[in-house]
Image 1 (cartoon, rainbow, N blue to C red):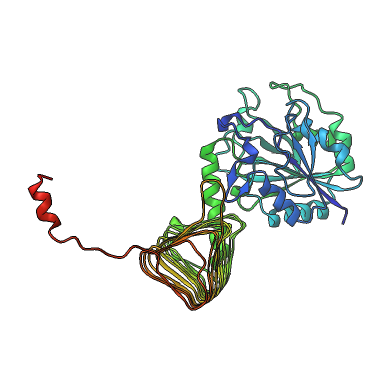
Image 2 (image 1 turned 180 degrees about the horizontal axis):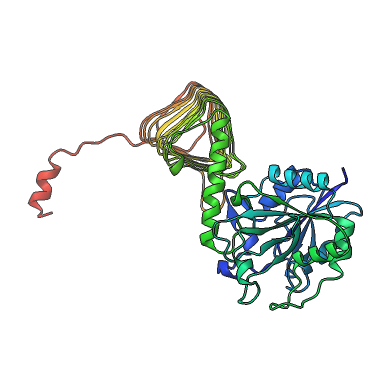
Length: 459
C-alpha cells in the first residue's frame, strides 16, 4: 500500500458561527472541532496530516503534534485549498481529503474508503451519501455504467437542472485520490462558475477526460459526514458524538445510569465496574479507576481517581484521589490536591495544593490549603489553615495521628508533630511538639448579672 497523506481543509472563515473564536477551534466533547477529523485520519493510518489553514495563523498552536500547516492565501474554494497543500504531499502517496468541520467521520469509514479506492484502482474515489432531503448538497451524477461522471453544485439557482435536483446521492466532500493524478488535475481547475471559485469536485471530469477511473463509495451512515456551519449544527453533532462516547464506555464495562444527563469528554478514561450517576460531567483528561461511584451531580476536570473511590455531589479539578478514598458530598478539591489511600474529604470541605495522608480524614466544614498531612489524622469540623498573610502563601505541616478540635485555626507557617491534639476553638500560631495538647484561647469568664445591667441601662 502506498503512503497515506490526509489533507484537512480548515481555512474557511466560519462567519455563521458569529464568534470571535475560529470555527475550527470550537469545543466538541473536549476536543477542538478540527481535531476530530485529524484524529480519525491518524487512526486510519495516515502517515502525514497536512492542514490547510487561513492566512491569519489563528489555528497555530492548537493542533496535535506532527500536523503540518499550510496557508490558503486567498479564499478561492476547496480546489484552491488542496492546491495549497500540494507541495506538502509526498510523491506517490494516496491522498485523503476531508473537511475540518466534519467531526463525526470515523477511522473505520476512512479506512473503508481508502480500501475501496485501492481495490478499484481509481484515480479518485468520492465518499457519497444517500439523503432523503439533499438540499444544499452537490449532486452526484453517474454515467450509464454507474461510474461517477461529475458533481453538480446547487448553491445558486440554475446550477443544476430539475432532473439533477431530484438526485438523492450527494457529495460528502470526503475523497481519496491518487496523489500524482490529483496534482495534474488541479492544474486544470478554473473559476468558470457562478461563485468564481475553484471547486475540488471539478477535478473529476478532468480525470475522466484523461481516461482515468472515478469511483464512488457510499457511506452507510449519512451522519458520518455531517458538517458544522453554525452553533445549531454544532449542537446536533455534539449529541451524536456524546452518545458515541457514552456507548463506548458502556460496552467497556462502565454503567452510565442516565446518559441523557451525563457529559463525558472524548479524552476521559474509566475503568470497569465504575458507576456514573446522573448529572455528572467528566471533562478533559480525567482518569477513573475500577469500581468507583461518581455522582450524582459531580464534576471532574482533569482529575485522577484510583480504584473504589466514591465521589457524590462534588467538584474536583486537577487533583488526584487514590484507592479507597471518599470525597463529598459537597466537597471542592482544587488543583494540586492529593488524597492518598483510604483518606476522606467530607461534606463542605475545600482543599487545594495539599497532600492528605493515607487514612486521614477532613470530615466536614473545613478549608485546607497549602498543607501536608500525615497518616491516620483526623481534622475536626471547621479546621482552617490560614495560609495567606496578604502577601505570600505559607505551608502547614500536620503529622501522623493528629486530632484537631472543632474550630481550630492553623496559622501558617506552622507544624503540628505526630500525635498532637488541639483544643476546640484554638488559633495555633506556634509549632506543637509530638504528643502535646495545644490550647490557644482565652479562659472563659462568666460576668453574672450582665443581662440585668443591660436592661437597667436601657440597652
